[in-house]
Amino acid sequence: MNASIITLTPAELHFDWGTDGLVLWIEELDGADSLSNQMTEVMDRIAFAIELQTGWDHRTDGNTLHPLYGYRLLLRDASGCWNAVRMDETGHFAGLTPLEEMDYEIAYDKVMWLD
Image (cartoon, rainbow, N blue to C red; front, top):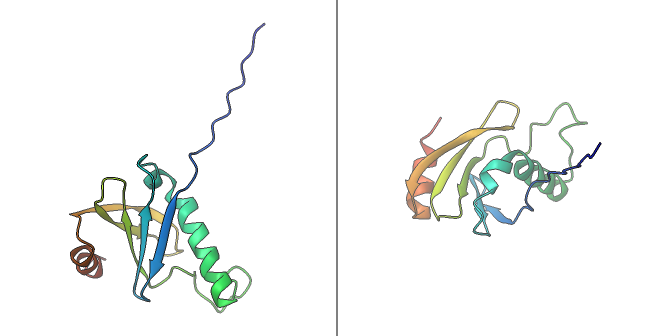
């Protein structure tokens, strides 16, 4: 009997992010356009980085909210278009809404009005 073992691993994450306190933007840095398929991992990494910056852990402190709570999230994909990142009430990835916009300022305004 011949057997093959195939190990599937997701592509490495290549992204940059930042925030102005209201909107958190995420920008894909490679041309693979794979970041949207790995948003759960991306958001977990950003949430962890925010916790490191603030010094609190939402998992152990019952009086704190998820680190991404309250932010509006924007994702710039490999094509240069901005997408609104939807989260559920626990701060986890719930999908993307294409904003059909390449200009950051216009995408910023659009994401502020989304529910």
